[in-house]
Image 1 (cartoon, rainbow, N blue to C red):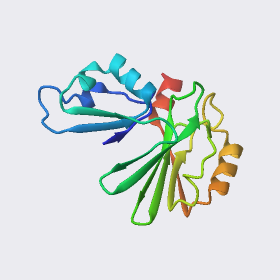
Image 2: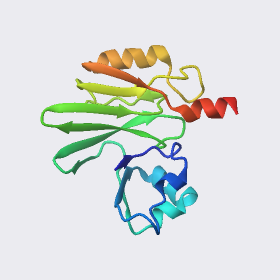
Image 3: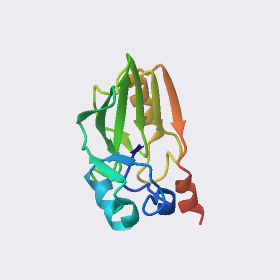
Image 4: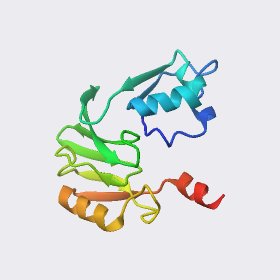
Length: 158
């Protein structure tokens, strides 16, 4: 399973299930992510083992007995990325990658664990530290983990 963001799917060979992998690959993402994958990673999308599940912001779906809720994240162009709330057995995990700012949503409130972007606060199109800190405090999670997206640094220094 991959919960995806359209501008951070790199190394298509890592996802090449065509011809030599028999495992099933389920990818969950929005319309922009699907379009990006179809254009740039055709080998992934053309595999009969790849199953793309399209969900846009503010949708709810289930994977097994886990409930997934999507929410919007500001990242320049509307719809290029979104967050996911995963709930199971009374626990809630929030995954909010590659964000400029979180769109207001009750879905991510009071999470047990909240994963959010934690680098490049001053880079265009990424989180403003003060705004993100305020939003995270208001979301009231038990624990916060700040993520590092290494390709950001690669793009800035190569």
